[in-house]
Image (cartoon, rainbow, N blue to C red):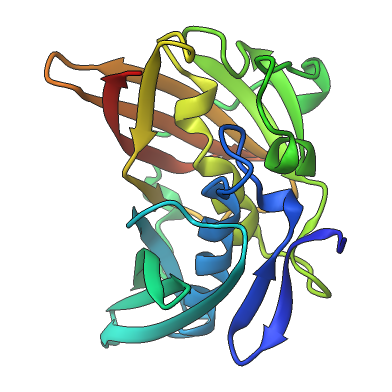
Length: 258
């Protein structure tokens, strides 16, 4: 098996490896790798080096099977100052995820930076986390995790660092955006507030807002989950790199008893 989430087959087609397997089902991918693959495709349709990603949303249309996938992208709204691009992931002829990215022309606002959260403790100060018995190890083992506070499957907020042990696409070094999206979808799993044996809390989407491009391999996740009274929850995360906070992630949750 390749040391990557995906093996390229040509013509924007990819074969998912066992590294993409999610913790709850051996037949479905964790949404971290598909989000990273969609980010790769969106980067290829980006306006250019003078633009930066301001927001990326991944809409989850159904479980992403561990199989061959096709990905395509397009420019939805061209522009010099702002541009909207889209991408779609298809499995077996059926769209399983779509992504949207807003790109904004690069500018210098260094002198007026304000409102940034505090930086996290470094990964070197944490320890390897554990996860509940019975979880599948594909994606979880394909990532290196360090816990600063909390861990997967333990009730309450959690602060974790993660980095890929494998490539996004075989033969390519992943970009910092791909690395960030591979981690960002883990916010709800890291900060679960309910007993996983009794409750489902499935995210229907992932939205990431960035105020700067991350650097390096490590991505920090400071995550918290809120559950409302009508079967809806929200997992929010502050995202970091080794130099400090870079943005925020959010996931709408379907919450149901098993």
